[in-house]
Length: 197
Image 1 (tube, rainbow, N blue to C red):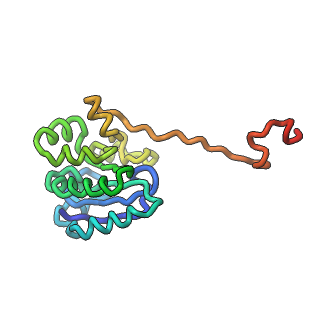
Image 2: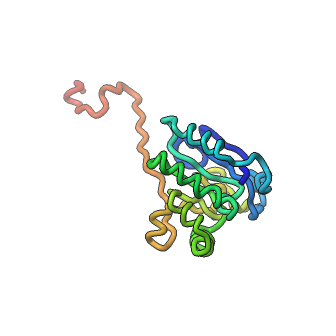
Image 3: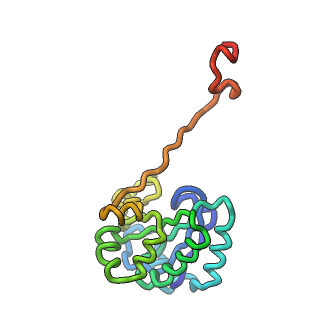
């Protein structure tokens, strides 16, 4: 397997600061693809044990929340054969890290419906991946404000819950409460009688 790029400090492809691995090789050839050069399986550099070691070393930094696989296409079979043992290494060293994967293949119809019964590597990859963003990029459904997706047809799927349920379960982002303190921050949460008001 070859890889097109390794991005550090990536905040666009999953929650938190992540290391993102862009693998080479994709047969989808989506119109408007942002990474067209990575369609070629020979593009980029060979993905070696040294490359794995570089990623694992980078993930030791405390500010990283996860690893994301993109492409190209991680679920092309030739890529699965390399990524399955790599993900095992990642999960063994970082059991709590979040692993996301972007795939043009549909989770239910193609990944679990066709690949899972056929290839042991698919089951191995799914064992380590937390979330899959599935579906081919559709330029006509592109929206720049979509969270972690390129086009509206794509889904963000929780892998373990979906495998247990036998159907896709969508990932929901955690809720954040944003509080703005315009005046004296020391008075927040203090009863009026205590702060003299």
